[in-house]
Image 1 (spheres, helix red, strand yellow):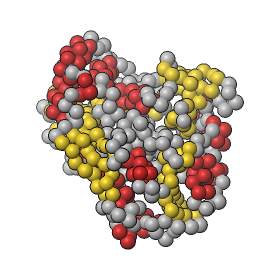
Image 2 (cartoon, rainbow, N blue to C red):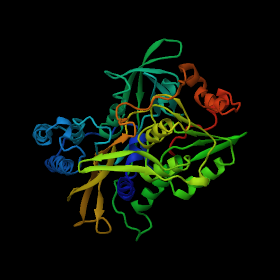
Image 3 (tube, rainbow, N blue to C red):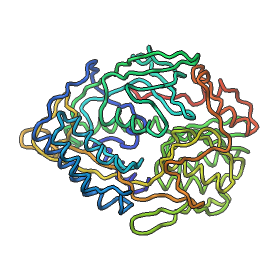
Image 4 (cartoon, helix red, strand yellow):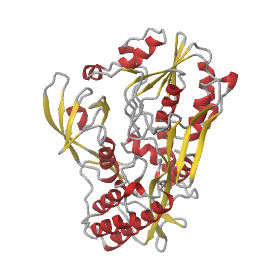
Length: 479
């Protein structure tokens, strides 16, 4: 992800919250009253249909201008537009229409090009997290107090969701569909417990309804501006860096490639006091290009070429400047898994190519294109209330008659492929670790972390899998 992408996303977050976080964390946050039934999907109105047709047209135009491959991987964006415009005209609900817009971009089969629909006036929380481990999908966490906690357990293998079998290639699209495009009131599973027994479970979703976004000014005390700021602060806390000093090693849990340079340099300075650094990038979806360059430079004693950015109009090298004497020079161990993506994968592969350290864990996600978030808006005089799938803001001050209600949405569009110095792209390939260590279903059920324990062993540190599993517990978003 480029610095420009990140700046735009952070700016737009004042209105639509962090796009990257929403898509990777999956479970929405809202300070609002709980509602147990799914908000009713009303028939799409003529105005809403017209808006979504405009959305499709805006996205097609931006795609044609901004997509890195002028041949669009063989897809004709204009012909595909005609097909999906016809489908939009047959959509029965606003949710159906959003699915059509999303499907238009899915024809590129590009991990970094996707539709970001308007923020809903309700939030969903499924109460479970799942991920690929090797070639199987497992439940890794369940949230206490929700229906999922009664029916699913860490260590359950997800055999299928509804009519879909779960595999590494398609899991991200399934999660995108469930979380962003078509939240479901319940999810049907076939799961297999650690003993090998299969069972069917239907997990009810928790719905939270809340007021639509009305105004973003600071003139009054009770505005949506402060609610959005609070939500961002809550998300940022979940994405904070954590670390533990143990013996001659520093174990650093880095959840995303962002944060200020001073903070990252501070932890690197702490690492320099130790013989070994274990950098845990599991679950790290990537982030700022500048943070990637800084991190590579902080562990290398020479300037390093990360690769080259291949764009529509030429190529540009991506080079990390060494921190010289301030770089960490000890033993480096990088921990990755199937959710390590983008900048996390690039960092891991550079370490591998430069023979700088050891990679341990699972095959990474293979989602490393570079993209820019393109914000759009649709205006019109429509009041959006509870139960609608559309959200809006009022432009021009306090809400009231005569104000312009604007619907906010966007699209992430790939602007560059990244080719490593070995001449290969990691897209749809990922990074294969030097040491493959996969937690078993029994490990997940017992809360053990054999991957981090093995990394500690390589660093000469005694850390059993039970203690490793308690070191960086997963934190759910505040209720």
